[in-house]
Image (cartoon, one colour):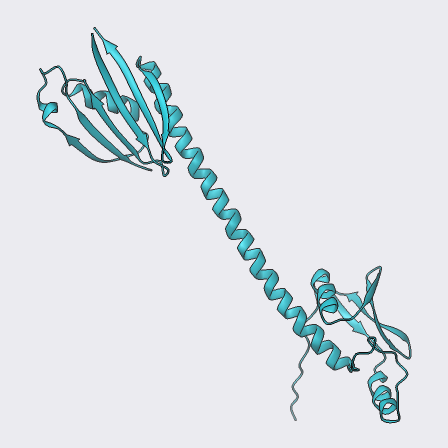
Length: 167
Length: 68
């Protein structure tokens, strides 16, 4: 006999998880290390709780079954995400997971863009400093050699005119 | 009284182009060496006819450096 076990994506990043909940239309409140959703079951509000570095969804495991039964007979007792279509815990988690993964990917892309931008700025700064140092060195040396110096900036280039009179 | 002139252009990448006017013979290269010597790798030197006219009043040489 064999078995296949599949888990959802661990919700590690609180900021992304909160945004994912917002995006799927699930209201929540924060209470310490817990994120209380507006989904209710027999034990109260279903919530995400920080456990070993990830947010675990805590809920009454029989809630879905009860909700399905109650739906069949004309209503269910567990409260709902406003008037949206009821989502079972697994459906809800799947929605959160999909949104979380999408946001996580976007976040990575943003970080990469930011990193590239910072690297570009650093390289530009390095280049400008290098050119400035070259100019300063040439001017200092020219002064030592008795040249008068005229500096111009022409189309992004530094032009130095060094003049000395000899007798 | 003679005027010695050196024109130095540094582009946005730090590449240097320099030329002399009114400096005789080998002296013009010496002058450029003093100014630019260790600042960049030398790419090319173009000696004009005037360079070889050491006794002439005016000589012109060009030196181009690459960014390091």
